[in-house]
Image (cartoon, rainbow, N blue to C red; front, top):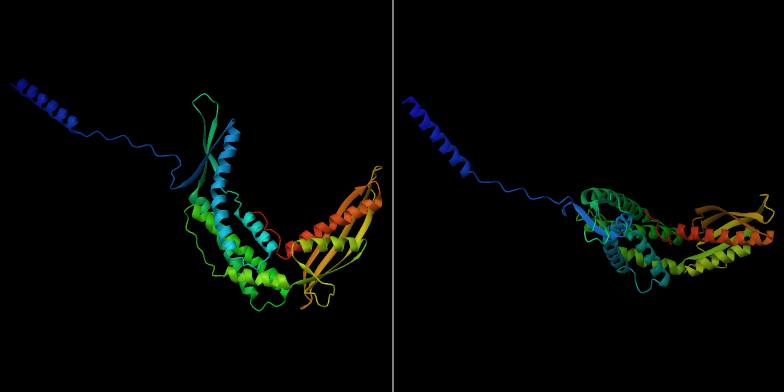
Length: 337
């Protein structure tokens, strides 16, 4: 009797166990999550005959995602401020600055993965990725710094007298506004919130810049070895940048002065004579008497004839001085990041 009861209980337990197991719902296998989800990463794919080429193309593609949109938005912003009286070179200067600020050196970009096509063609593929949050935080910090700098520059304009210093200061503000726009565009590509805090009218800045450029006069007063050659070379560079020159230092807004010095060098080279041309050049604003720029430059050149070496050195020195002077006025392109 006891054995029959035990057997019945065993059968009942097996029956209940079978019901319990059969009644359980099977859990669906979890979906495989992408390694680089779009919400967190911006990606671009590249391909090439080698893995290295595929990697390079992927990174270039990722950079292009930024540059095309950033350049378009910054270009539109800049040219909305350029009036009909700005002049051809002012437009070229703006275009140069837009190109520089639109170029992107991607911080934190990396290759997420590489693979080879299964078709037997031997083509390699690579996926370049950038973390939206990481890059966004970095550029947001950069944006804060640019906006703080522009705010300080605008405050410095209050009461700033003299056409020369005011033009240089306005050029810095204009360049800063373009940088601000470019960084905001990069953040928009990342879908990262941009914190725009500037309330500066770029149209007004551009209009005053154009007016000042049409009025500003420079006087070049160099002395020393072959100073006339150097002065003519610098004058040509200024003219090509639509900068106006005057014949009288008393009526100029700024006077550029300095002495050219050519010294022979003994380098024990029997086939050439070497010389060094050097100059210290200052730019003084005539209205205030303030020295606004001081440059020290030197160039070494060699030639079979020492006089020819000196002439070449002076021309190269003058070109370098002209470039640095124009940059100091805020009329050159912005430095790369």
